[in-house]
Image (cartoon, protein in one colour):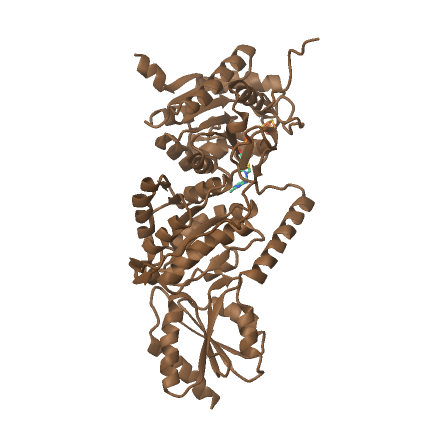
Length: 356
Length: 250
Ligand SMILES: Cc1ncc(C[n+]2csc(CCOP(=O)(O)OP(=O)(O)O)c2C)c(N)n1
Ligand code: SF4
């Protein structure tokens, strides 16, 4: 503890996972997250862990399902096209209440898209992706330190609620170097995994990891029970950061890399005398509605400006949060183009000008 | 009076849902007997497929995971890598293992993943009502080959045991069937060896059981076995396709 080291985002994330007790990693190479696999390949054999390069993302996520079901702290990492392939497994993992951590270092899409930073997998991560009634807890770090902290938290949240957790980063965060500090992990308060397939040892009834429930009533009961769990997550795990939302006329809403750029734009706007604040969702699901309630509490007229590296996906959740009580606007670049602070500033000024 | 025939302990005491005369029940029993005889119920974790044997997780008394269609070898890999000292097996049909899950099968075999796979080849998709399988014979009529499987239109059946035997990973591959008492005995011996291999750490073993689907073949159980002997066994000959022990003996 207390020692800062300079690390690349993807490698810091991998190290954080290992320190959180993840000894099993299954992946398939894809840019821009390959450093995660490379780091795991180097480290795991040295700590008695497992790094396995699977034959596909489909296989990798199903290995995760097996390993998570068997009680291990397990992780897989990929980028957009690979995450699409994992959706089948993610749905089964959610449906069988298996904890695991899935990393998506998002790149531009659709299709093969590009390899530059993007946030265009927001819908996929937050609104389903796979089939059925389920949620992923989605964590969106905006610095390497936060990536490290959230990786540890992701394992804890997964184990606490028996659910898959996704960390959404982008190529910028993955490649960037920043000083980081690793915190100690304490899993003592987490529930025992007495449901895992570890072998009965002839001492207990058998455990079954399964998502098939052929009787509609059984399935509905299970989905309802899981919904209760989601309600709990919504009550306990919402995370966000706000800055100067109290008397702002314009409130930026941005996450991840984009939030950093939006903050620079915000400073520039403030220097020009504009009243601008920011809401930075850290959990994309559960979405931080609470932050919007705070921002709306004064009942004044204001505009929420969603800034994303996509054609506008999170902006839908901003609209739900605002629910007609304020204007909602959007600015985004996509395809791997990172918006500049000045572009965002221009948009802020346009909105401010329109208000005059 | 001494009980001479009882349900194996590893076979859960619930009614199996299989159609009357379906070999799935016989093979389940053989697997359970082997688990009993090796005394490994408490250390075994099974993986059920998607197919008629989807409920296998209810039938074996050991810990079980239910996999997505075709993914059982990947799921088993995940479990085995967490518990290398435990016995992990998959039980899969031909659609599951040789169509949608071909990649997972081939690569688990190629890695020499130390698991045991029981493969039921009934040349048809049983659960979904009798469509063409990757193992459906040329000329065979199914719901999706109503005029018979045609090479040009539908491609050729896959001989899984022969294909996997070309890989360096597997330790043991044998094709058996369960139509007669001697064949059932031979099948059990093969299944037992496949589990023993895993316990000895020898790597991937697969037992292909040439089977029937009386319901979707539209035959009685005995007619189905006759058809299997006349048509399937010539295309899928019984025998050992790979055995690293045999090689060592040479
Ligand atoms: C992804 C996916 N595709 C299709 C299905 C539908 N499905 C269920 S069982 C099955 C075929 C199973 O056939 P086989 O593996 O030969 O086993 P059998 O039923 O003959 O024992 C199919 C296509 C499914 N459950 N999941
Ligand atoms: S449909 Fe065929 S394979 Fe399935 S249980 Fe019935 S007979 Fe057996």
